[in-house]
Every structure is written in C-alpha cells, then in structure tokens.
Image (cartoon, rainbow, N blue to C red; front, side):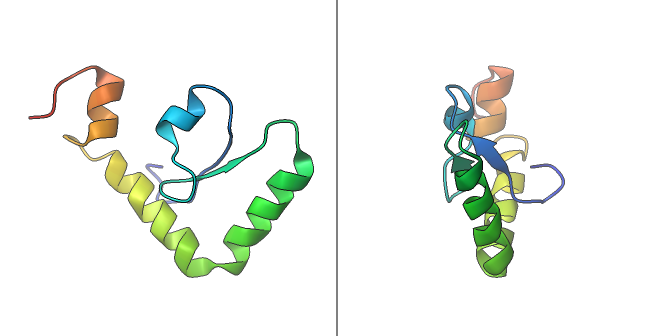
Length: 77
C-alpha cells in the first residue's frame, strides 16, 4: 500500500476488513490458485484500474484516514 502498488490478498478473515475488493485492493479466494491467477491477469490487463486501486490504497495510509486511525486505535482528528 505504501509503495503505491496494487494489493492482491486472500479473502481470509481480518484481511477483508482492511482490503476492500476493487477499491483499495483485490481479494482472491484463499486456496484457489486459479482465482489468484485471474486477479493478477485482470490487474495486468487493466492499467487504469490497477493505478486507481494502488492510489486509493496509498491514500488509506495517509495520517488521519479511517484505516490508519483504526489500525493505530486512535480517533479521527
């Protein structure tokens, strides 16, 4: 996220609370390598979507955002 690269993660409990599929990352079905391959191909074929997801993920790490405050257990200012 901090490197402004799109995130691909398994949809295991906890991860899906941070990564919102299609918004700040891409989730694939855990233990499904075919689904992972499809999601990788999707991002490689859709550069604009990939860039938008990476940008949104980076924004989520900006101090004062909901994600970073919830990870740090601090209220929004």
